[in-house]
Image: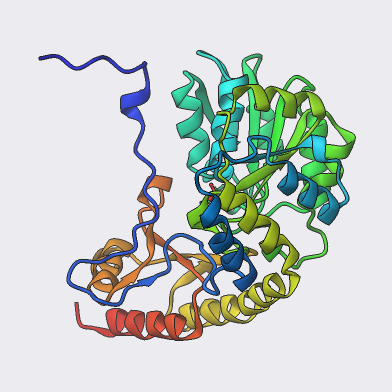
Length: 364
Ligand code: PMP
């Protein structure tokens, strides 16, 4: 028997690992590994999910018209410049499918989001990684990485897993430094968490330039990761291309209804942001007090750096898993000595810090 041969490059892809919520032998698991919202979904979104169950025999609106209109009204945008997707991950794949062919290149930061290289490689594209400035995207390096074959420049802002961001004037400088033929994708999955006033999710740039597209998600602050719903705002010509590439029913009816309800529940989003504003700095202070280095973050997670040896990141991870605490190992991102921590509920955060204190204090 011989297996069919996949396309070149596919077997070199390391599968994206995410969404595990169990640890062997542990009953109650604390999941701080996937940058989900510890507050969960809005009760209004939950009610919308339940209400849709009776309509499960109907196909969804493939164009997600009501959700696009709700997003347009919420943000003051035009609905026909919006496309909805099965999580924002799908948008990354659709963008690569539409714009990246064999031998073409994408440009991204060294520690940019992992889905960009996966999606580009699937399309036969080559990934060019630009060095960063202290784990922050470096505009000059990104521009310098562009070649005649570059089709897309991906910028996660804020970036996962570093938690760093570029201020709006730097993003504008990146846009201005790219050739018009290169599409700048501003992935603003964590935009709602950012409280700095020099930050912009990129809508202003999209409105001014046809080669900029912004992607967003309901997986993070809206607490709907399990329903897989995201969206993008771009030039009509780019959105129209993505509509051609997407599956006919790429977003389901339950997710569409939940997203509309979640968008309207501003108080829930505010509560999630306030929670994050309290507990992210708390975690950062506690980690530092334990002697760990932390990359300053504007998102709902922290990149925590461990010393090597028996107090290393992998040893810490294994120790925490035994206590039912799941963090994200960062080796796939090239960080051998770091773990990523999602901000959790108060008791989860306290349990993590107590466990880490035990780990670091324990005799090796
Ligand atoms: N972009 C970034 C930067 C992310 O961290 C994530 C989630 N890990 C995504 C996009 C994808 O999120 P989703 O597909 O759930 O919308």
